[in-house]
Length: 165
Image 1 (cartoon, rainbow, N blue to C red):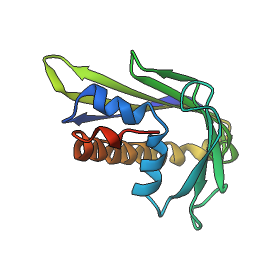
Image 2 (image 1 turned 120 degrees about the vertical axis):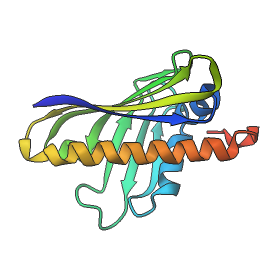
Image 3 (image 1 turned 90 degrees about the horizontal axis):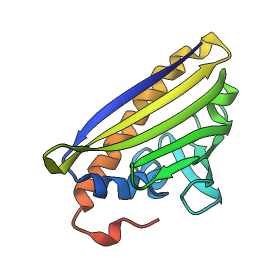
């Protein structure tokens, strides 16, 4: 079984300000900071935040499943504002998924330079149909991270030092 689930979020911040976070390693740090009950940290195993970067994300104690997962950034396009990151080890791959690819897009809103739409998608292939409930919870978790990023961007949009890897 395979499919794609997507979530969209309208944001009162420019696409460039939003992408500064989405397109960087700061995205992982915001997720860790916003959801300490879910994540305890992350480690950059390879790369600088662009294509080829591999990170390992660690789950908090009590979160069901494997203790961590590794994700590789295969696309980080600053022009199109797209990041693609398949899970390459651990996490949902040990819970019935054959493939799990997260895609993040920041889209400009026509005629509204200070607003954008954030789109988060998960493309998946299941090996085990019993993993299907994880699709919904993963999509909701991604949406929660998108909201945390949007809140961060809005709060820090006038502080150029806030956008660093």
